[in-house]
Length: 390
Image (cartoon, rainbow, N blue to C red; front, side, top):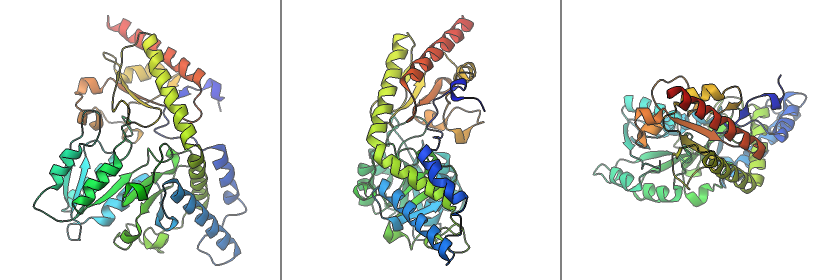
């Protein structure tokens, strides 16, 4: 395996974060001698169940919730599916869904499925910064049809970094008698969250976005909703009957450890990543590179930059950078698509402008010398593209 110094610089922390050393260390015993089924009644089983309880408590503490509200899943995609499909149906009490045009596919695709099944799905416009248009949402909710429903919103947009005003959205949603589901897979561990203060009803979390292992996530469910949520996996009735299947203890322990670390470091990490992002933009300007920041200028995820370089095809730029720097054009989950990002188009960019956008995201381990090197490589690659086009 190549040493880190020989690898391209990694500036794609919005796609995934490497598990912290403390996380790996915490997981190892549960991959070895401590392993057991947490649902077994013997000593090893009870010990494993206690470890799951501790992990559940750590995840709940990260978002200001109660441990009994945490349902472990295989990741954010399953959690979003459970939230939407578990609460909505054409024949159930809740038959309507609202979501923005900028949402991640793990919300968009369940919405598409529900629409085909008879649930009324309404798309709500966003502003050019990516912020949810609260006035547009109020207009969409203010209808003669009083059928209760669900509003699903991604707190931090994975492609452009914009952070949504959750308390204002929650107040609006509840005024009209609906529920609020928040996909916090990008924001949990990066910005402080409190489900009680926000007054949200469900919240999705992803371990591998906060320096935990991939393969596990969680759905937080308010206590009064737990009996209303219809399980999507049926079997042994684990996770309070909401998600059958044996929870992988080593992943849950890793997730819990990552949540504890994130809670302890959240301000320090955010300040570090914000400082890096500001320096990246300043240094690009000093190098004479023209760019446009996409998304909200201030209400955004720490260390998240979505940049348009006019006249520079993003795929060409990434190809030139690939030997020395790893970034992306948007969601890794949507790789292989030929059309410009639906998120960028929803913000008003045309196909040409959207094809000129690259996402740089910084992390806990990004160093200032790496940032300066990244700017040098980016400026040089853009210069080469401009020269070729002359």
